[in-house]
Length: 423
Image (cartoon, rainbow, N blue to C red):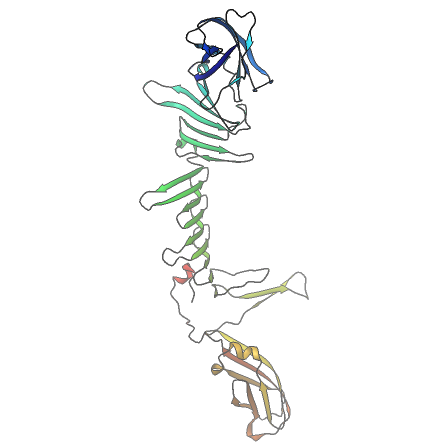
């Protein structure tokens, strides 16, 4: 019974050149033998691909033979393939089926379909096929390929599916497409002006600065989303920057600027100072918290529904002044012309008591007038003027500068409005 060792070589055209070694009982055969070759999709059993090729007179010299096998252009369309060989050499009467079937592995086969100008390459690695399709069309005299491409398919795809990646060149330039199940990325570094697209996505590298960048463009070609080292910019369709997120080039902290459609200043947040600057009002349906200062060009307001009229709101403005002031107020009782008011702990904790002032309003028409005759860190003492001995109530209003803001500056550089710096 003959035995076989073999290898398959891919070549141009739809034929595969198959070379083998044939021996009987370890002795190389020298004779003319008959062969039947069939292509299968499995190592055993399985489905036959195409028709059986019968070669009635193959010369075997020193055990070596070589044959050209043409199973057609579609035989190697993306799946694994095994070659089954039946051989009959004199003096045999019947064919012997050689086992096992011979696999086409690794660089194993490349079929070039000349009519379609396409080359298919299948690689089998660990049993998972990956398919690439090269195509070349529109070759002009003396110039490179006008249309050429590389298409890459996932292991579970066939050539009838949409490829996962396309890298090509057409009459408008080179392009790269990476397609997912529901969306894709399309990169067109060069497109004709008539295409009204330039790149949909542009990924680039700054050779001088040593950094990378990317833009996602409007159909006009104007960047809508632009990234370069340390800066992310969003432009509107007319090319004006309306949002910018950046890292400070020297201090390293981040900041955010949101502008109007004309790129004039709107709002900025500076991570280094913890400040927020706004050209107009700041509205918030919930709480607005900040560890730094909140700066606004308009008034600081609060707004609530009008309980007397459902169709209107009540809008109050905060008291403003040239210092960072705090207050506490209440009503005291004068007894025999004297009263002591103890300041609450929370007020003493936040106010520099050396800056404290007290305003008094008597609630009796018989009052001779009131004065603060003593102030300390915990309380103040009120007395009736002219050594009066009245007994009645009075209202008080105490104010002081917040601790840490004693040197608050009223005048600031105009540039702070644009950069969102702290006062």
